Length: 345
Image (tube, rainbow, N blue to C red; front, side, top):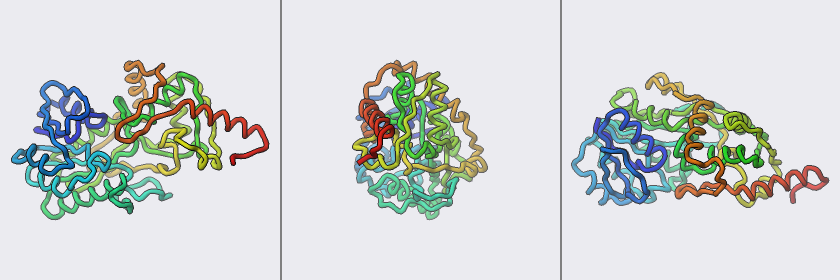
């Protein structure tokens, strides 16, 4: 298979390339070449800026692909990208176009779970992450209906695993646990999120290629949904640590001046996805359950020498990071307030 990966330099894109190479495919990566990333031997590189239509036409004009995997199509990366022009470039020039969307393409805040592909999508504008994802999905599905463009939309939830570039998820949690730092838990630890291993996601995207049942369809791709309490408990068992959990009172949340826990611990992300459709039409079944996937990730984490390094890291895209000193101060104040007569002011 002659495959093109849009992105290909970090996390999902990097693992998408690795998955394709492992499958013996002819792989080309298209990106700006701004992010340092060593491509596997034999992988070709096209330099183009997807916010610039002329740049994309120059790089892609006249080229045909068996499959295109779009893992860089989101608002923070693509800015003012003309999505219609991008689709025009590939319509008639690829056998499959697999777009990585997001759980954020759904209308958020609904209390009915699990969420299924036919449920309402985001009503936010395209300047927001979820709104952009939903708008791009609509363009792809409409083009399929009009010309037969072989687009498939993949909606993952929380993606984890080796090379994760969202720096407020499993990496800082493993560090907190190993270094016996306090773990701030809001909403009673009841916020529930679906987590999926990055390699399961990439294998699912590859499985869409050439499948008639996949064209013009949206699929949730993820693993188990777990509460924050289960998340912390499981990662603590994997790390061989006893967590110091500090419940965050609801009336304190508006007074926090910066993030004091992972963004997925917040009530905004409370959701669970159904993968019944992907199982039925794609034969998708996650290789990793929540525990085994995080065991695999923890082994990678240890090999990187990250276990004893509390230095904050900030990803360029999401600006997500951690501040253990701030977390410790908040934990100290919570304990002091809860042991006295006063509440937060």
